[in-house]
Length: 130
Ligand SMILES: [Zn+2]
Image 1 (cartoon, rainbow, N blue to C red):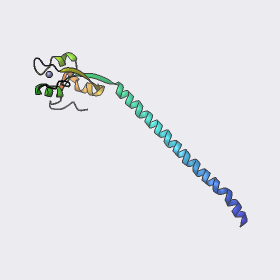
Image 2: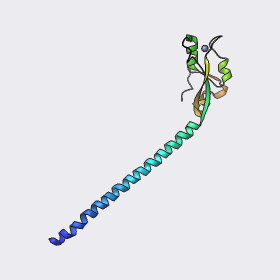
Image 3: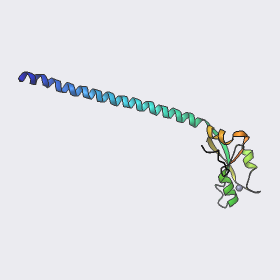
Image 4: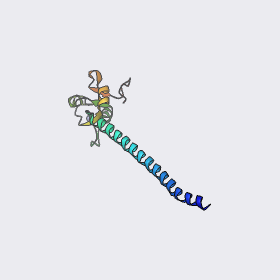
């Protein structure tokens, strides 16, 4: 009886040790996977963020008394070029600012495909989503 007790005594801590080792190994593995995933996401995000194009819009921001024509016109229309935006004002004496907006390259190419320079999002059919 005493023999078995002596034998069991050193076995118990070893078993715990082994379990701890596996737990730590699993945690380390999970951390490594997490880091790899985070790296992949960061890489994907940076490449997408870098691939942007600039579009132009008329904006009534900063004009508290902007007319409804300007507001509606500005809200829905996107321009490929500053010059096109400037030439497409809602009315003479429109003082809307021309502002820029970043588009992803993918969206830019889709919206301004086939030589389009103005996109009005009220137009149907709507090939401009994305
Ligand atoms: Zn205006």
